Each structure stands twice: as C-alpha cells, then as structure tokens.
Length: 335
Image 1: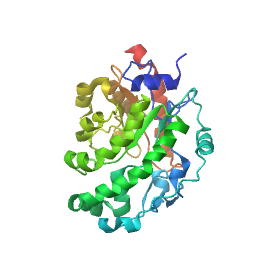
Image 2: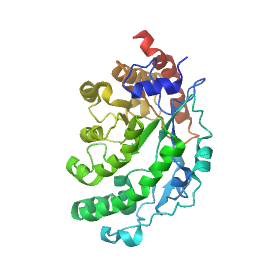
Image 3: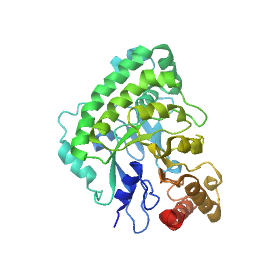
Image 4: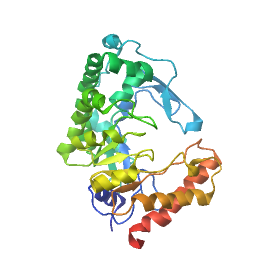
C-alpha cells in the first residue's frame, strides 16, 4: 500500500499521485506526508513566546497569531549596513554533536511514512530585514549593494557547512529554500536585484539538493511569480505556499508538473473570514482542489488562523480536514 510519503514524493517528482497529498498536516488515521527538519540549534533562544535568534534578533509572538513571531517592532540590530562587520557575528557551532542532535530532532518523525523536508533559515533577504527593518534593509540594497553582498557572503559561508551537516545527518527527502521577497501586491525587489544580490546564495544552498537528486521546495509568500524562472534555474521543483495573488492557473498551464504548486488556498477570502460557515469553508476546499489538482502537480495546503483556543479557528481547521479527507483523498479515483 502506498504511503503518504511515497504519494507526496511522487507528486514532487511530477508524477501522478494516487490521491491529492496534503502538506504538513496529518488527518485522522493518516500521518503527515511531510515534516520539516531544522537543526534545533538554529532556533537560537527562540520559543513560541519570543526570544532571540542565532544572530541576536529579538522576536515577539502573540496568541492571536497562533504563536507566529516577528522581530520586536522598532528594535533593530543594525542601522548602518556599512557597519555590519561590527554588529553581525555568526555563532560558533564547532563543538556541536550533530549526530546526537539529528537523532533527537528526528525522533518525532516516522520516516517510513513521512517525508523529511530540510530547512535551515528564513532567508537572506528576510534576515537582512530582520536586522534592519524593511525600510532600511531595502535602502541598503539600493544604496550599498556591495555591502549587502558582503554581508550575505558572510552569512552564506556560515550556512554552507551547516548544509553539509543537514545533508549528512538528517538525510532529507526534500531540500527546502526559504525567503519572503514579496508583498501581497508585488515583489519587494526587482528580478534584476534578486539575480544580483540574492539568487547566488539561494543557488549555492540549492546545490546540495541538486547533488542529492531530491526535489527542491521554495517557500516564498506573496506575489512573487516574477522570480519563478530564476528558481527553476537552480533546480526548484515545488513552490509553497503559492498564494492566490499570483496567476496560479496561468503558472500551472505554463509549467505543468515541472513546478508543483503547494497551497493555492485563499486564506484572506470568504473561507477565512470570522464566522465563515461550514459550507463556505468546505466549498472553498473543493474549489481549490478542482482548480489545481487535475493532472497532478498540486499539494493541498489550507490553514485556519487564530488563537489555539478560538472556537472559530478550531471549527475551520476541522472543516478543512473533513473536506480534504472526503474530497481530496478520493479525487483522482472520481475525476
């Protein structure tokens, strides 16, 4: 019998799966198709309530966002990109027992049933903005690109040996790259600036997945479709969360199963509104699957957002799972 893992990896390879796979979330009686694996040391002192990352950026979270965290507003490490060498210091991981840490980090995952997706950090662009704020970070990229490149190179030289440890000790099934380079309306930066300042470092990390012969999953929120040709250049085969402000139908038509779309869920649409009815949420699940599942190349990923004890949030999460189980898991047998 095909496992959730096998069905998911078939999809990421561009093959026709037996059912629509679901990203991350388990369903009753079914383990998750994939789980993220990040070396726990990379979290720094971060917890669900806040703390600092490995670079010293302080974060704050709220119950209403389900524990999601952002840098403390107005509290930045760096206010002048030309001074980054005095402020940004990579931690020393020379004494880490990677074998023991990997074993502990992975003990929660049944690798016979669930694929492991590698994860390392939130991205070069995103980290720059964590250091400086978006305004100063974007101005630095415009006014001092050489200094930004030097900072990214410093970070990259720190990350690459950790990529080796991630490859050797975690042995992922999927290689993940992350960077949030876009707003809901447009990219933060032009494709030209991305190619000059960011892409070389994404590509250097993606090379590990290419050499392993495993799918490469790109995480980028917002209307970031402008960067797809560049992602494909360095081996990306899957994109999450592929949000609806992009021309998803046009992208699916253009690239087919060469670029698997994970998500395609309208989280700000009627199904995400406070008090949305059960039928509204379940119809949105069906509509999303109908639009993007035909022919494969699609991984379902729908989320409800809110405080963990908010009944509206809990209802939506349950309805999404119920309809995915009823509709998505039988879709390719009935269509």
